[in-house]
Image (tube, rainbow, N blue to C red):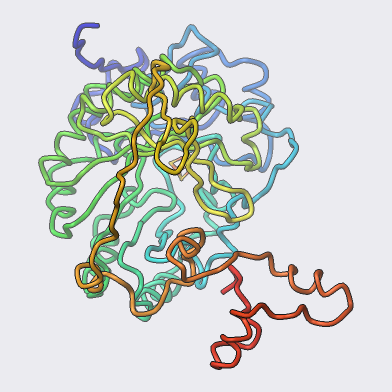
Length: 448
Ligand code: SF4
């Protein structure tokens, strides 16, 4: 396929807007489309879209003129239209539906801060976005002026990060941090950079996709003062990769900001292996590293976007080996109930014995890798400086491998197995441990 230039589009209704206004992000924000009348200037709405747009209490609708211009006006199935224009299906409940499917609220020590993983936190700094995605995981918070993050919340978030030295990585998200007033964004970044244990700052933003005009020199100058700073954008379909997005990404990478992409696997948008291959290849062309493909969350309003997990596996099968490794993201399911991201991929290890591992490649070629006859773990003196003084309470399966844990048990396990009787007899090792005073009954659990 030739290295075709990326398109640049402007809907006929915006053709007379002077370039100076069109390229001004303030103009884009203040001219967003959100009513039946607005959209019908661009294309006829379906009955289902018209009804949804008139439904009270619907998740907020706003679309920048730039992003609306990417919609093919002749195609009701257009993949960009499907992401941002509601249909009646959004109102339908589905099996497994939840309001806060990732249980973020349960992992919030202070409002707007999610501490789910050992060394990093998610900081929600605004609930505003440039446009609103119909499948948004945080639709319970985003776009609602009554749920805005207050200055007091922000101070509490910073205070928590200051007194939690294990946090070395802060992901700023929302909403969309790049919709914030530059002064406010600067305040957030400055405050984080003053915390010595915060090593890296990450921003999650769909602004380059919805409103690439926002990525101007002043913003890049601001961001590059806070390195190491990384930015993940959110592109779902090849049609979102335009000349304007390519230029915005070029500016950001020239400011030294590494770019990644997070896509959500969406029925009727990008649930096809060849389409996804084109997307990841085009992303790499504009110097954006595909980072994640998310399985669609079980969030209210997103039922009609869900695909099977098998579809995600089929897509990963079509990527790994078929295109550059640089193009291959990690496919993850964010476990309902707050289990965090779980990577899912086709199985490449077919079998193993004590001296061989049998592997298959993307073509179905199967071979045996001989394990070394003598493998020696590295000398303790080489690795001691890297070991934590206290084992991480979230070590999980790695804790079993490292020998820090013997088993991971559900909270109810010991109680149930008492069966109302005597405590179980201790093994010889357990008795030895007890005699040494190393623990009452060696309660090994994943509960911290
Ligand atoms: S840009 Fe992100 S936070 Fe905003 S609506 Fe889309 S998915 Fe939700």
